[in-house]
Image (cartoon, rainbow, N blue to C red; front, side):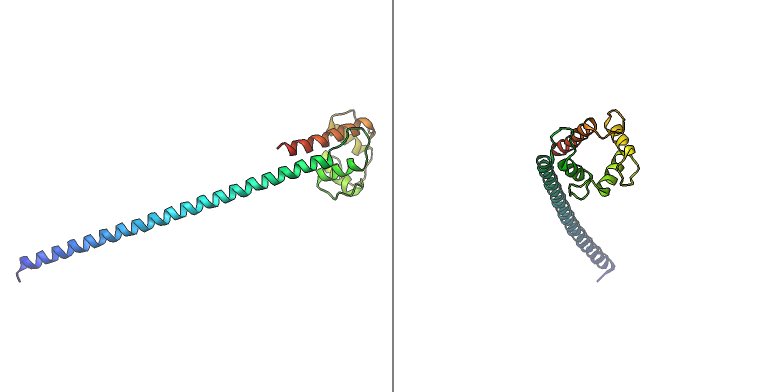
Length: 162
């Protein structure tokens, strides 16, 4: 076999190797595309699951807010009774026992910007009146209580309509 035949053989082998390399690269590209498609599909499925969970959580929160509106809505009558306290406690996220004690008072004071010492006095009433935008006379009377009851109902309604 002559030099020319050997060169032809080398060229043919190189062509074969190049073809094999091209086929291998094409196959690897197909595998990469398939992996990418699978990853995109998995991401879309996760996004859909997250969106569904968020929608369910929102629906649950809305249902709970509507239930709270029905249960805690106050008669705006200016009388601070047990339901006014329980509604206040619900809105402030404290124990709902219907007792306007230190825990509820501290939470309310924190909400309205008063010193949160758990003791309801004239300063707390004045801070509540300021918060509500009514006359600041330091007396927890019907005007102040009516304004607080209306404020509570608005919070419940806003949550139920969110």
